[in-house]
Amino acid sequence: MTTDVIATNSAAITSLVSAGEGLVTTITGTPLTDNATKITKGITSVLDGLLPAVAERASFDLEGVLVGATDALTGINKAVAAAKSPAPSALPPATTETETTQAGV
Image 1 (cartoon, rainbow, N blue to C red):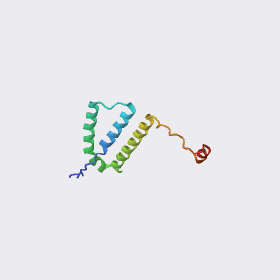
Image 2 (cartoon, rainbow, N blue to C red; image 1 turned 180 degrees about the vertical axis):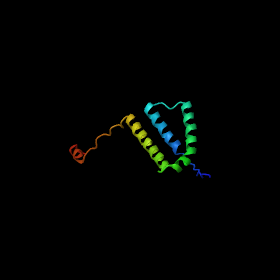
Image 3 (tube, rainbow, N blue to C red; image 1 turned 45 degrees about the vertical axis):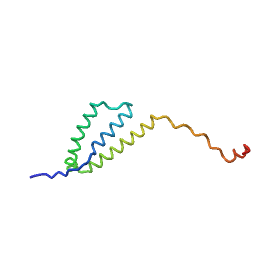
Image 4 (cartoon, helix red, strand yellow; image 1 turned 180 degrees about the horizontal axis):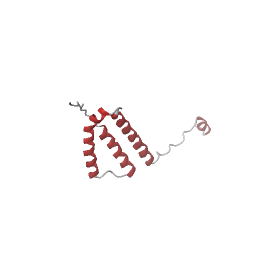
């Protein structure tokens, strides 16, 4: 008895890990070390290869869950980056027509 495994070019786990790495980098302000990057790339490439076999046995859309989690981490990363950024410079207040008339312009 053989089990057919449908191979895909999906990189859902790699994308998820990359989003997580980006969030860690944003929070800490320092990039991951070269060794940490090499380790995560190796592990995620193996997991991406196993994803079709695991997803086939799951009773839900595993790849959809991973994509959604990636989107969530990306959104959190954007929120953290915005929170760490200085506020844009305040724009001068707009003059109203009344103020212009009173000024004699």
